[in-house]
Length: 232
Image (tube, rainbow, N blue to C red; front, side, top):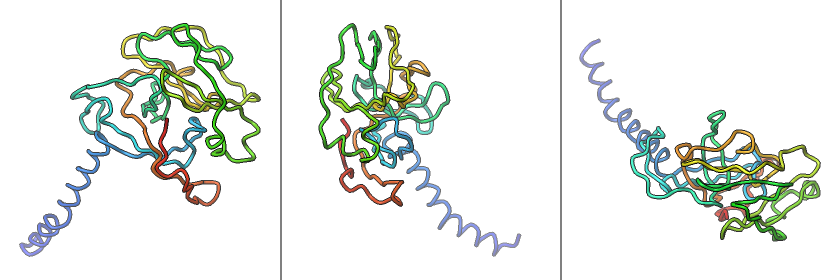
């Protein structure tokens, strides 16, 4: 390789490749350890989160991790009941979005889709019409809707009576650093009822907002009323 070609390659690397690489590493580290947004491909959190929503994930909500790893550098808080979190499935390693139902030390049970936490039944009330209206008109008649309250968090849940699902389980007590997570779409969610509890280290961030939303069944048309919608 002659000197002129080497000089050109070095100039190209220094002027273009190196800055782009630095930007990619910085952005990747930021998304891995600080904040990110995720596309939601399934309906396991309906009617709270719909397929096609882009959700904001605060990865500094609970701790600080080494970018691109689950190694924790600092821990300042823990998920609480009612939080919507991003976690890695204990079963498959897939990234999931679920709601925290039980925290370490809790006794959790469910009978006919009614949760019992430490012996007390969760409160259920009629769901507001605006949240129900987020579901397509032709789909609504298949489901039952309610507002469930966990501690001070009131959120939507949806059930589908014709579908075979695990609607009951006997009391279980959560060990240290173990969390019980479920989807708000109770009869169509693979969650702790099926794969067991999630370890604290598998929870990577808290979800708070739908940033953008696009309807996949309508050529990805924007759902303007869901932009910057808070997630209870």
